[in-house]
Amino acid sequence: MIKEKLADSELEIMRVLWENGKPMKASEITKQLQKSKSWSKATVHVLLGRLENKGFVEADRSGYYHYFSALIKENDYLANETNRIAGRVGTSLHSMLASLIEADELSDEDIIAISDMLNEKRKEIDKK
Image (cartoon, rainbow, N blue to C red):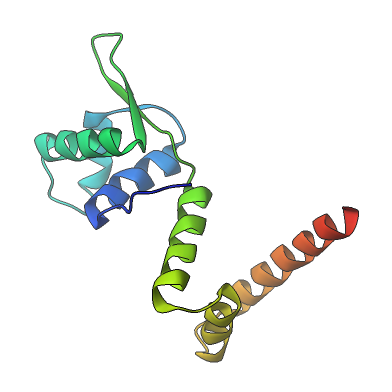
């Protein structure tokens, strides 16, 4: 179970690592983030250090360049955060999903994707 919650800035770094799916140099992460952020390489290094201390990232320092990799999968983090929010507001995941549906915030693509996921989950349960 994931114990730490990420700050928004740390989550930005993790998104870059998750999207790329491979070890990256801090300069590569900085370059990718500069499309939306004005962070320096030093800022990215500080955030990577925090993420490493929290156990979200590992650094390969065996060569001249340091490469950073995500240790936590995106889906695992998102599932953990969803459960954390449900617990914090004192509701069930069922109630959270119901509120999203009732708020009319779901697109047709969202509804199809959720339906497909539920059908897949049902198949998994039926096999057991």
